[in-house]
Amino acid sequence: MRRVLHDTVSRLRRRLLPVCAIAVTVAGLGLGWLACNAPFIPVPPPENVFIPQLVTDGGGATRTVWITQGKPDSRAAGAKFFIFNDAAGAGVIIDANPDGTYIAKPLEGTMGDHVFIYYTTPAGADSEVACRVLTEGDPAPHCAR
Image (cartoon, rainbow, N blue to C red; front, side, top):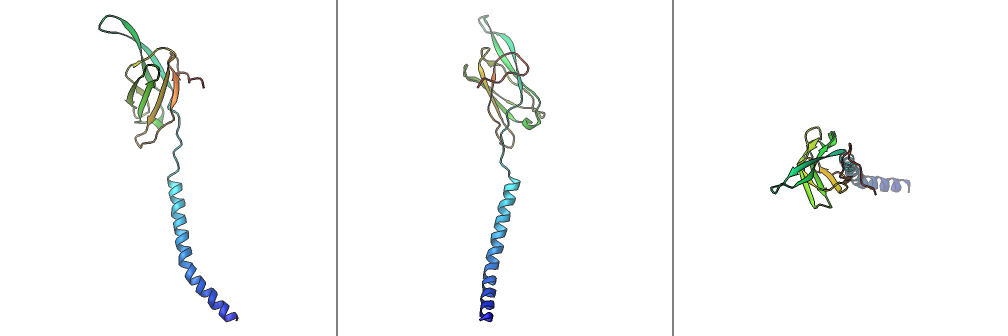
């Protein structure tokens, strides 16, 4: 009886060993992929400043437009920034410098408007969308929640 039990266990081990080896290999590869490709956690865009600028149109009327300047942030190096004034329905797109700074083209708007800013890195990761109040100040204040 003992010999029969020993032979049965030996055959079972020989059959299960390759299956277990494959399962361990697959599990190891899966965990290795997870460790190397941790999920991207979006971060807010760097702080920015809005600078008012008076412009004159062809009829001689003046109006205020706003220049958006981004502060340095290495996470935004070379990123493409999207700046959109919801109230005015206007926006600009600008590529950041290697240090994450940028100076965008003039943006239409009125003091107090909500401006939404986010960026996409060269690798394709998106930041959170930040809401800033269009006003003078350093840095531009965050929108009230």
